[in-house]
Image (cartoon, rainbow, N blue to C red; front, side, top):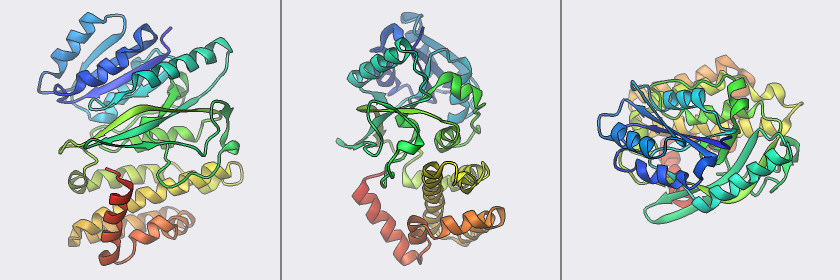
Length: 333
């Protein structure tokens, strides 16, 4: 039995994909690596096929027409056979030492017949020779827990795609399907799935290495400014999943987490539109907040006056420098 299915969506990744693959291969026969070639125009498919030939019991290669990152994840989930499911971007990698710790823990789950829907580990920003580790010290460590056991998330402590391993069966039962030809869908991947998670397990180990440095990365501010419509689309998609306020009484900590996450998504859209600040951007900013207000007035008021969103809604002369100052301090993107 494969303990983890790792999916690596690849598009023109020939210059760096080997690092990602090699780091996961340290898991040996306990892992499955599904490389999804998303219509690349370079040697990505050739490199993937060479790996598949060398490691036929570990690596599967899927060659498909271009559909974007979400399409690659969808295809990987469809074919995954491992007990847990993990996405690794082709320019990132994992710590071999931490991977062994995670595999050992999953083996304990299997041996003791413990059902854990979500396994969480740290991730590390790898940027220009500097590192910043995102840990979740608000979570109980090395024990199974629920939302009731979680303390308040601190700024920057978000459960991103980099930090999570969902049970493969759980993800398939949620019928997760990400939008195609769209960036930033990793937000949907975690946000949608978290609502149905009943139990979790956190390991304080620095597993995922998130590389920041390529000029064409989707998280670079200059790139995000050109793809603001996709950021808005993802944010609206998350809003349309239903208001967190609907389960405030039943699951107040999940509600608080989701409200803060949506606040961040609205803030990102708002500040990027203020940076561009064309008449069209001003119109989009107004339309986005009006969309939220018309869709759910209670949710609108909750998000509009949360601290982060309020700051970004200040005049541009204050909001934009404030954003760049926070970016410098927290070193995101």
